[in-house]
Image 1 (cartoon, rainbow, N blue to C red):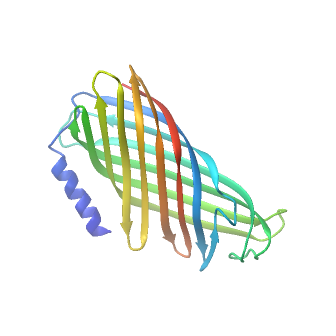
Image 2: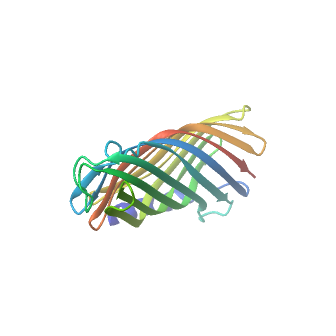
Image 3: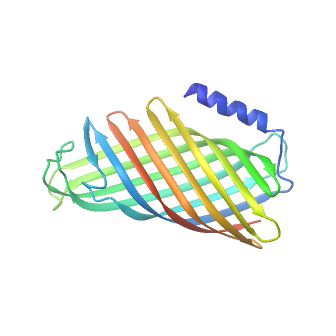
Length: 244
């Protein structure tokens, strides 16, 4: 991971003097993400399928983001992003998991919070826009599995960490139309763990109003002690925001 951080940091140093925003820019948006969930959770060498055993297969999630861009050379721009994922399901364990025996009905709740701080530079800033940067993602996940009825065994799986990730964003504007297409990606892989988060979208800009629709895919394969989450979420999203 250290080599990857050095490489990403070196890319930022190279990109820093290439371009900066011409004026101050501030923006924020809110997204509605309808995602499907698949994968598994692990605890003490036991594993459970979150889709087939727990029926945590689909839900809608909230996402908030904001950015600040400036014309000062060498200083990076700043982007903040928060994603809240809450999913509940009722299923039946095919085998025992942690302290919960197999063959019983269970109620499950998955909470996954992600807060990103991204420092980035505008490498290109015209009808083709290209940003490069580094993201620090605070990942906080909790999966609770309890025998149905509320009086049985309860298992709790937790993962928590701050993860450095590379950041890339590109957008292509159709001149004089307000229409553009683009994509964003955060990704890292190290020591058997990996996290990725990318989206592709179409955008329409009308004065200060910015509307987007696209597809977002996210994967978390992260181990924290004896607890592990190895899940993927993907689905369409729509967002509305303001830019100044």
